Amino acid sequence: MERTKCLALLGGGAVLGSLSTFLLLRLLQTQKRGVRPKYTENGTTELSGVEGRTISGKKSDKVVSDDLLKDEIVSEHLSRNIQFFGFESQQKVSASYVVVVGLGGVGSHAASMLLRTGIGKLLLVDFDQVSLSSLNRHAVATRADVGTSKAQCLKEHFLSIFPECQIDAKVLLYDSSTEEEILSGHPDYVLDCIDNIDTKVALLAACVRRGLKVISATGAGARADPTRIRIADLRESTNDPLSRSVRHRLKKEYGIEGGITVVFSLEKPKIKLLPFKAPSGEEENPSDYQVVPGFRVRIIPVLGTIPAIFGQIMASYTLTNLAGLQVQTEPIVNFDVDHYHILHQRLIEHEETLYGTSMQVQVDVEEVMYITKELWHGRSAREQHAKDVGRGMWRSINELMLVRPYPELKSEVKAVESVFACSEICIF
Picture 1: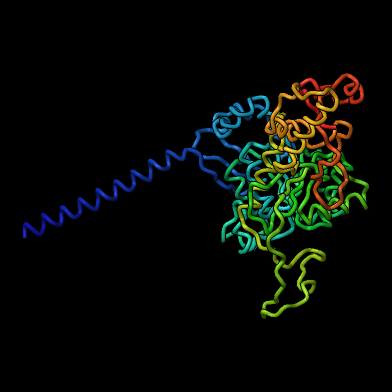
Picture 2: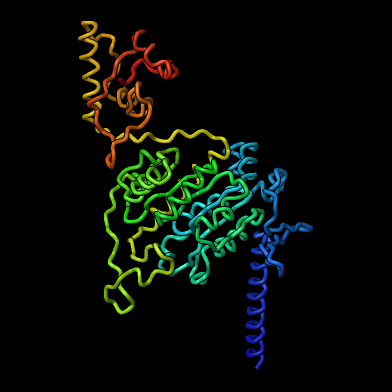
């Protein structure tokens, strides 16, 4: 009997000890979290865990104050950005207002990084809802979000990440009737992440007309090579059916030939649109199932990582511009090694013809590659703008030759004297 009582007491002690340990661990985890989002009845978001401190995530008319960066929690949240940009440049980012139109695989990732980097005010625009098939590429959506609007889904998640940001979500389709509602307020940047050509062209044209800075994403579907994604002017984008169509429409309908930054892939799409099948499994007319006229209902296969990279690139480009950080994007020059060897040989032959010797040519093929690609972007000193080569990429060197800029040549291209100062070889 005594042995039984002893075992019972030992068992009870073990249970109480385990329970105490569990409660202590939970308490320590709670203290480590420190700051926890709490949603109030009036729709605002509060941070609890810091005595006497409440931060509202509700929309207001003013962008985040510069003083916010002096807040202990916010400054720690953005500490790596402040170290990278500098305090004053981060203030510019935190005082900026950005509009993101289209919140799918590209737009959700772009908006997410803008938020995490401390953008002061965000407008999120999309008419569509989160679907199960979109979870392979969406930045924050979960299965619990399926069926909810993409705009509201992002807003709710974002308020738990950076509640100081003033976030507005609009369940809208961009068109002429919603232009003022979406583009008013003088946004510092507009991100076009739309995959419908009619809406994309209308948005880009409106941004140009209003004088708004805009960056546009072209086709991210049916591609798999992240190393071939580029940033360039729209007139230089190639190998992408969407950007080609957008370029043609903007020129034809609005007289816009360039001046719009785009993110695109040099990779040719590997897979075409899949045939549309009704719930019965039989092929039917896609237009019979369109929720919005003109919008695609056929499926384009998407590797979720590629639209995510598109969005990250758009966010990075936007943030560096807002912060005033100069980033030199890689020139779109599609020459191969043979092209550079030919240019090098032409330089030697030109020197021998003109001077009787090539002793002054003290550059090798690698230096020719650098001069041609990085300094001159594959263009002649006489013509500093991209040529209109239709649907193809400019890769001809028939009209290009490397020469040393002798005095008569310098006077011919006074507009590029700054380049001569850093290069003894130019392209003609």
